[in-house]
Length: 142
Image 1 (tube, rainbow, N blue to C red):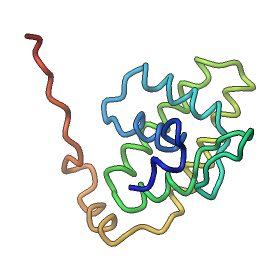
Image 2 (cartoon, rainbow, N blue to C red):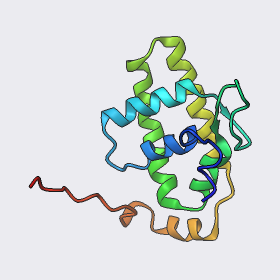
Image 3 (cartoon, rainbow, N blue to C red):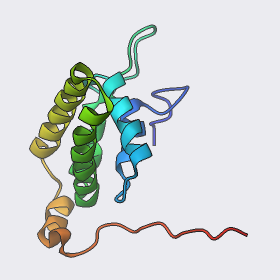
Image 4 (spheres, helix red, strand yellow):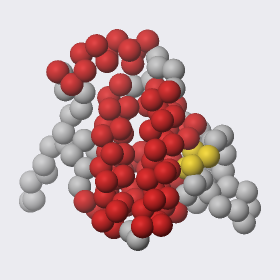
């Protein structure tokens, strides 16, 4: 709600990144897409659209907002950020990979430091002992 108006031509970079990182069984295409998004966008607050003619940024506010309220999102996003961070060195030259790792480190630190909701804390008691996700069903071809 209210997210489409921030970026009239597409989803904002943080929302695009969340679509890639929400997948529990992330595939290599989504990892590559996430590496590209992180490389192409600096991490900044607050959650605002780009200035006309300016660079758009990954909204740290948006990433924190989603993950601080839901333990499952936090866990899946954190797992996948580690995968994306690890893949950067295989996909990019050292300077670009270092930029991706630094950006992911700043996101990871902010997600860990963000105050969590009571719902998040209650779900965290179960941890990984209970599934927090549903895998999509395969659609059989007709």
